[in-house]
Amino acid sequence: MSAKLVVITGASAGIGAACARRLAREGARLVLWARRLDRLEMLAAELRASHGAEVRVAAVDVRDRLSVDAATRDLTATGAPDVLINNAGLAAGLDPVQSGDPDDWNRMIDTNLKGLLWASRAILPLMVARGSGHIVNLGSTAGHWVYPKGNVYNATKFAVKALTEAMSLDLAGTHVRVSSVDPGFCETEFATVRFGGDAERAKAVYRGFTPLSGDDVADVVSYIINLPPHVNILDVVIVPSAQRSATVVDRTA
Image 1 (cartoon, rainbow, N blue to C red):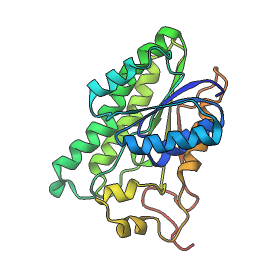
Image 2 (image 1 turned 45 degrees about the vertical axis):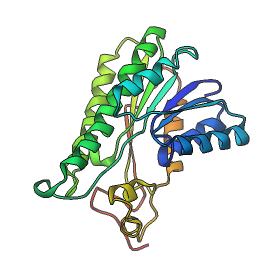
Image 3 (image 1 turned 60 degrees about the vertical axis):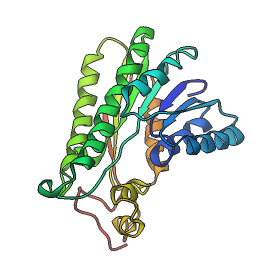
Image 4 (image 1 turned 135 degrees about the vertical axis):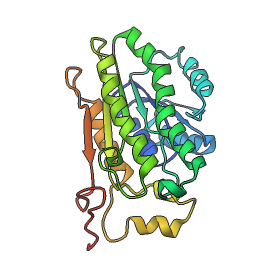
């Protein structure tokens, strides 16, 4: 990854920040996007101090197509990104459809699905024109196994899986690769966001077993994007050893 240009969405925390730390250590040049600019600036300062990394940050809400397009235009002086990590995503609420909050649904659809599309649509033409590049979509085991009350979140992650496969087909012959990394239980801010800041309820999600960390997922992302150009991993599912499906988790540890 030395000197490769990598764009990471949702880079202010969790898996996105872990990927930034991992790739900075490998010598990548980073462009970090997220809504929380203060967190991005703190992370960028850390990476410059620890690794001498070249890091640019921008306050980008992937739900806003015009914001994504403007941030992408700012990249043109640097050149086409070598890698786009579509990491921005969230779950909001955990309710059956009949009592779900439509505002939560919109947040998930606009971030997990439309946000991935806006970033991909903006950056892919640059990769195609150059004749190389790699898109990595952060999916979820929720895109493989439906679970009770997951409904709309499940639907967005099933859509990410479908889009990864469809994008790969559309890009045949361009030398642009597309991959999806689909984690299971991973302890980040994910559950806290889902439960509206309820830290105790979020902590209970991971009680009784050792979940994945953001670093575990970043290891997999690094492996995928460091493969030779003739090798592509279309989809990889990564779960903690205690997890065997969406609902089967050994909590006896």
